[in-house]
Length: 490
Image 1: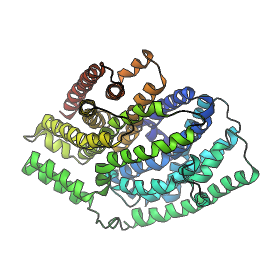
Image 2 (image 1 turned 120 degrees about the horizontal axis):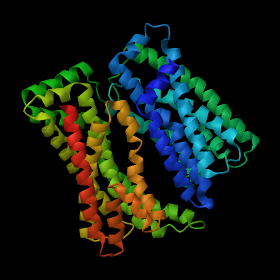
Image 3 (image 1 turned 60 degrees about the vertical axis):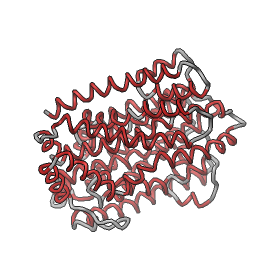
Image 4 (image 1 turned 90 degrees about the vertical axis):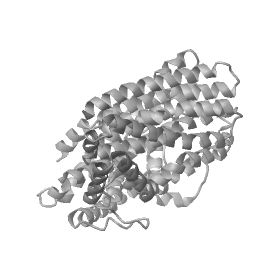
């Protein structure tokens, strides 16, 4: 089973994605000043490679449910024990390799590498098991993500203590706190009680999570469980959902597609969160950035970076809606609905235009108010509207990118990890790399709207040119993705 899992993860791009991300993380840490590099390394390692299993296990489990793999396991000698152990080892190994590479090559001087490796390994296995518990009851990636938001919000509360926003001893009850302690021990000495607390908590936590995961397997896989009732919502059986969507497609393709999407938006709380996500994030950044700036003042003056922070919001809305619509495309493909649309009057091209147009309109409705609310720096209406209009082209780019480059939701979730580079990469480059060298980042279309926003806040007359280049680059990528998607559908 372990060898099969490793092959599966390599086939679906987990290793390739983290090879790219590790290089990006290393280069990013190298660009951070020595005074902040340790804190940046700790936060980066804890929030990404260490918890990768929490998110990847979701896509694996949902895919294997769809393919009937888990049903077969219930009558095989391997059973739930072998299944869980294999997933824990394979995903934890990837986390350890990525985190160690970031620590050694990005930070450059890990003081206690052994402590860091132990902390990451124990934490990664714990998050894989917790991730299995979180996803076991669900049958759809979109349905699962509302639960993941709740889990993530609670688990990552200790990060507020690490950055100094909120300090309470209660954080020591949550599993991210021992992870923070042991990862910090990779770069600076720890007291004996800290090592004992971190390792002891994670060992006990793994034992408890393992028992919990086995019970979840038996309840939701072996016996079918009670997947329906969460957040006051009943589960719709996949067979019925597939039948409903196919029926809509056969009666009236365009109307059926719109009605199916509307039903998903009304029924799925995760999509409701996506609808308000950019605006909520804008409010948090507006009021949280000055607080962080005050705390960082002795080390770094952050106010010169406010235009970049505000401009980066132009990429968040398209990223969120590009992901959501992209997952719709992949689910349509897995359920055979896309094949039905391909031979209907709607056609593959009409389906592509509908999905791309939906991603653009929704991204615009989310991004424009988010940019207006974030404040931080004065900006003219022309710059604000122009930036939003061009940046939200990233929504259809990402949506069609998922549909073109990924074959299923596992590959889609792996590719989504690279979206962070598209969202945050241009802002980081603009902030730390001087011109003209930073224009190399213009190979990413998302660079240009952020650059235009930053230039517009400084009243530089060249900002419309940046928007023009951004619009052209987005449209060129869209044209290529559209042709590739249509050929693949045909």
